[in-house]
Image (cartoon, rainbow, N blue to C red; front, side):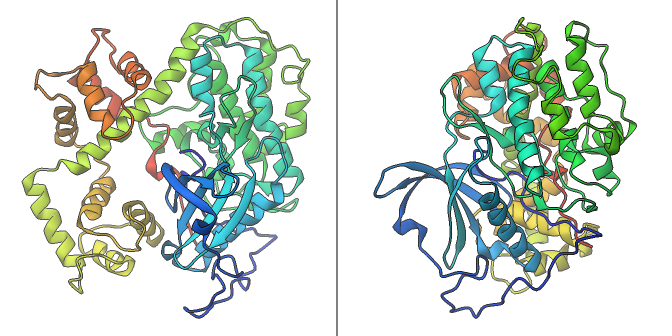
Amino acid sequence: MGNCSSSGATYSESDEAPRDKGIIRVLPPNSSTGRVLGRPMEDVRSMYIFGRELGRGQFGVTYLVTHKTTKEQFACKSIATRKLVDRDDIDDIRREVQIMHHLTGHRNIVELKGAYEDRHSVNLVMELCAGGELFDRIITKGHYSERAAANSCRQIVTVVHNCHSMGVMHRDLKPENFLLLSKDLHSPLKATDFGLSVFFKPGDVFRDLVGSAYYVAPEVLRRNYGPEADIWSAGVILYILLSGVPPFWAENEQGIFDAVLRGHIDFASDPWPSISSSAKDLVKKMLRADPKERLSAVEVLNHPWMRVDGDASDKPLDIAVLSRMKQFRAMNKLKKVALKVIAENLSEEEIIGLKEMFKSMDTDNSGTITFEELKAGLPKLGSKLSESEVRQLMEAADVDGNGTIDYIEFITATMHMNRMEREDHIYTAFEYFDNDKSGYITKEELESALKKYNMGDEKTIKEIIAEVDTDNDGRINYDEFVAMMRKGNPDITHTTHRRRK
């Protein structure tokens, strides 16, 4: 996702520190002061040339931008203000800007260069992280050891320590939110997404359910948590860094949550018997079910295995660890494309049905659906989505960011709501990839299909085939494709919950 939030933003309610609801000033539509940042509007395009899209999240699109004078490149997260429908949304964006300014100057936190607001969007210009994701670097490098894992985890926990010492809880720590600044061998890791972060004081209790399924702490699921939840998430990342797979795994999100609450962690399967006892000791202490017994960030950094001069070995880890890590990534890439293909290749019968649904919701016959029309129309069709879930659906569907859903966006959103897991939908996606209808997806067919989604590079193709092709015949059959589609997904769309009380 680059420097773009993959989770959107949310708010949290603290028993001890209720939010100040009076901080937003409602401004007249023609005011030259921005309603989000509360300062004079500025045209970011007068200073920066916008280039290609780097990533897309629930609220914003991130672009590569070049400063007109210095020619220096940055990332710009552009958030459509029409998507900010209420005071909480505005608070969320304002808080993200405040937190990034508050944390600026730390080596492992992406630097916010400037925040600008015009009549259509809020634009956050930040340093460009051109080195790619952490897992990509590990896999490309090849040689991998406990010492390398310790080095990566140390940088992540250093971010946690810095945040906590400055009264900030991150709340969405996951590998995708850590990018390398450059392709240099010794490039620092940078935390890039603070869309779910909040300020806290000692003793504050938070109750909103946020985060990503694999990394969420049990006390978050119980809606009674504090900054210790960040240590849990970092512990999950460390478990993956050492084994290639997450400690809590299931076929769907609810199954993952159940596994997290049960708290059983596997240290018996490979490669754990060959992992040092010191590394296992640290993982166990970071993943203690009781947050009061969990190590603090300082204690993690001072653990014998984690210290720079500590006892983490440089002996190469089992090659299977890298293989599993590749699988964890590759399956997700193919699945995302397959889900998009399903939405774009529906049967005529489904199109007719969806067309009628669209017309019934578009009460003013404008050709687009507003949030209010969607909220009013879904219950009539038997949907039991909460208002926050309807808003999630709206935000996910509104691709062009104009605050309404057109017909094509509606189809994608509706199929997204139905989880797109029906057998006939999976078969539709398989046939899309299988151009010659041979019953197999070949390397060439995969490359052709993925290029349409800017993913058809040689490395990605090889990774996907290597991990999905379980019978090793160099191609993907239907059974392998179905298995991939139904496996647990590391970036499930609904893993970030936006809940208001």
